[in-house]
Length: 453
Image 1 (tube, rainbow, N blue to C red):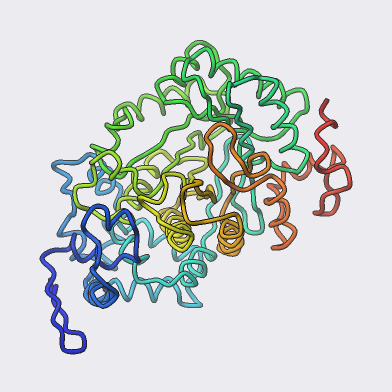
Image 2: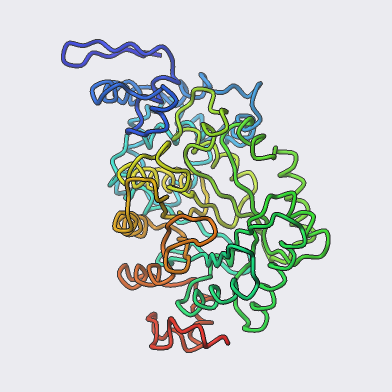
């Protein structure tokens, strides 16, 4: 590999691919904290120039984390379609970027190509793209998935109802859920983050959501976002779970910090397939977010964008119903301000979609980050233009349990109206029957949760 370039009389020599990948990143406070970022814009441009001229074979032949020492690397390598890879192995990263952005390259072309790319190749392409490039390329990609209903179709923006409660109070969760439903939110999933990580608590919440779904004949799916081991205990006790959930990292050591490994995920996959209440075939919900590996001291000197892409390489093994990056949740240590959060949200959505995943984004920030709700509005509009499968909806955009800011139920409804998008077809039919939507628009009943009381 040629790892050297000269810019305006200054020669830049990078020691290996890992350094090139890290320094080609757009500015990220997490990379700075890890001590692997470019020193200035000039070094960043030099790294991008070197990366642009490397071939896809160069990236595969110089693994950042060898399969011999990391099971995430083994999953990614095992999934590669050798025939498709052989067709493109001599492409440069610049040529991959150009192919994705060409007007004549469509969704079927990209879906086929993706099977011949590793997660590191996908991350490399993202590093050469502007924000507009990331929106344009992702907007071509349609990834549908089916649990109890289908989402991800062109022209559809689904929403996760996230009616969290600071004490897991069932009536409190119900109240927030009814508000979500009244705004037409909940087609992606009714998904609750529990305070109490116990099988009994998970079971009670799943039973309540399933009862609401059955009483009102709501075409959606439920999930409780406890640790996978807790969900498995609840399912074995008879809890009605349509899907199982787990957070993922991009390295084996990062996943160990989450208390998981591939063997455990395989066991959970077999359990939800055998005993879950979802129709399928897509029965998983994964969450990710740039910086988690650094938090666990499990990044191995690899930049956070590449590690995030590796999360998606692991996720696609399980053919999930939904994946989302909780893009601004960790805080300014990893994404310092709104500029970095917006960039990361667009990167993550693009990288996940290119790897064939049904991607959503939690458009969010923490209160100690240099960002505000206007910044989140900007990112939500950009993601809607990029064809994001779903967004997260919480009451008043303020999660009272997790203590961070996201998008509200009515924010998602507004984005649908603004961008001429619709709920998932089966869910929209239900909204029409309930009198909440007519001809693609919310009715005057919308936003009134007393309809369900």
